[in-house]
Amino acid sequence: MTQENALKLFKCLADTSRLRIVQSLTQGEMYTELLAERLNLTPSTVSFHMKKLEEAGLAVSRKEQYYTVYSLNREVLEKTLFEAAVSEPEQADEQQKREEEYRRKVIKAFFEYGKLRSIPVQRKKKLICYEQIAAHFEIGKVYEEKEVNEIILPIHEDYCTIRRDMISEGIFRRDGSRYIRLK
Amino acid sequence: MQEFITYLSRKTEEGKAETASLLADGRTDDANFAKVRTNIYDICRTVSQALVSRPGAGTGAIRAQLERFHTEWGAALEKAKQHDNTHGIAVEETKLAALDDIIAHFQEVAGA
Image (cartoon, one colour):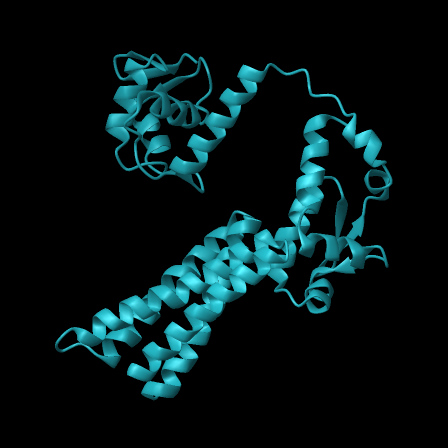
């Protein structure tokens, strides 16, 4: 177990409702509605807690007709506290991790379901958003201006500004009315 | 309409107490959902108070505003479902459940 996973596990269990869910699941598999009834929570709140338990590796789910059935991942639960406490940090570069976290936060703040809420004023944030938009284009492929507009428009209505900015930031190279994604 | 506003104030206060109690019980995420619910009662109270004091507005304006909220949040819920956004679904369902409760009470007070 990595230190990151151990932290996720501890954070996940530091919640009375989730501990009660785990306690219920020790009695066997259960579906969302049954857990909701037993714990006096709404089904959507149970689903929310279950997602966190799944992300921490404490529970697994499977679909059964219309229901989602949950069970405990005993392998993780039976690990000792000692094992979690002595876990090693991941080898990934700390600076890189911080940057990834910052990037994730910017994307969460500026995008909603794939649509750009507004063009950031700060250049660093703007670049992150443009890189996110650039992911809709293949590197090296030639796009006509009309195609570029059609791809950007569903993301943000001001596709002209974004297209121009992406050229000046070196994300696109323009050759007449043709565009190539460089990075 | 004063009774309706008093009801919204009472629900807001009850919601604040519930949020504090859940936090004290170590149920942080449930407390956040209770806070979302409380905010809905508080928003509806603020809007209703403003509409009641506006000349020419009244129960009709409040009803229209509540319906607008329902349409907007219903659309937000559908969007969250389309994107399988578990957190978003829970938030929007919490908002709509509180709003349904408010609308039911409003209909009792103002007549359907």
